[in-house]
Image 1 (cartoon, one colour):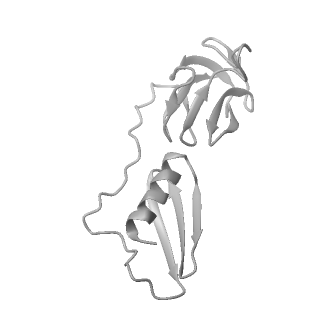
Image 2 (cartoon, rainbow, N blue to C red):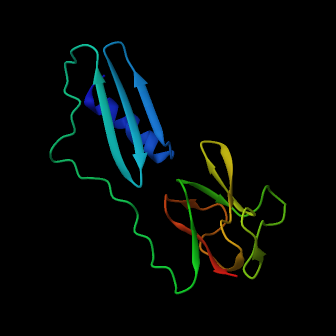
Image 3 (cartoon, rainbow, N blue to C red):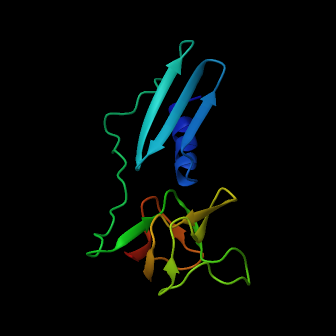
Length: 152
């Protein structure tokens, strides 16, 4: 496997919101873990590899998306991964929540889809929803604000 192929695999995994990726080939093993927007490759060689798998010195480090400053007194629920935001559990069903709703910790607020897996995103506090920061069926980034909640 050459460096370009490895870069393509890592890019696809990152774009799909994968938290960890392991690749085993007959002459080497690669493990990549993604955290807060940075890629930290860990490479183990069991046999000599013709191409160096070290990052190039000119490679730009990945940066986390810039988050907007939270408004005073509001709690922000952020996306835990890259995915598609859905306000309702399914087509034709009512939304989980809307502006003005009172929510409790553990209550489902929306669904994020990543790699065809639906993940409910729950409130982590009791409060009132004052803003839904994204539109239904929109792509969200890691750390992007989803909801602003006024705590009780």
